[in-house]
Amino acid sequence: MPNATGKRRLLKLADMLEADAKNKKGIKFDIGTVGHTNDDDVKPSLSCGTTACAMGLAAISGKFKRAGLSYFCEKGSSGFILETTMYGKEITYTEAAVQLFDISYQEAYLLFYPGYYPEDKSEGAKGEREVAKRIRRLVAGKPIVKDVERYL
Image 1: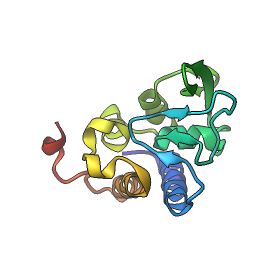
Image 2: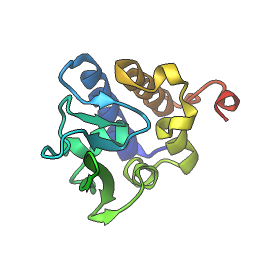
Image 3: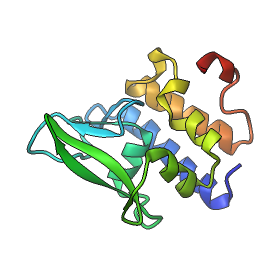
Image 4: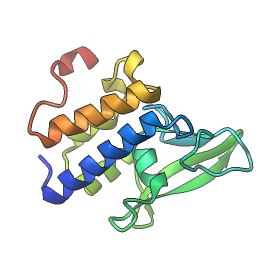
């Protein structure tokens, strides 16, 4: 269970996900992609030219920069690939979530790992709303998902 700061940060991310789900020009959400652009000349941003997961959205937004979360980009074969950092050090999105939100690895996986999401709730606005819903359940002290076994 996260501490008060972790809960506040999680709720901020849930709000961001829900707002982006309503924004037709926002990121293209994909739980399986930390961050990626299809344009060789455009770095990730909060626009429809960027595909990102919840942690990618958090990093790109800059809203958690004071807490240490940021990102760097590498030019890939088609566009830019985003990776998360904490205080300037490259770190996996899962480790970043554990540190940023004061949650366990199990909680981080249940919230942010693609394998714990059904296909129909892993992309687009539906996916963003599902992650936000899980975040709100964790903050409320409820089980993140009712039947974890079905995702294993």
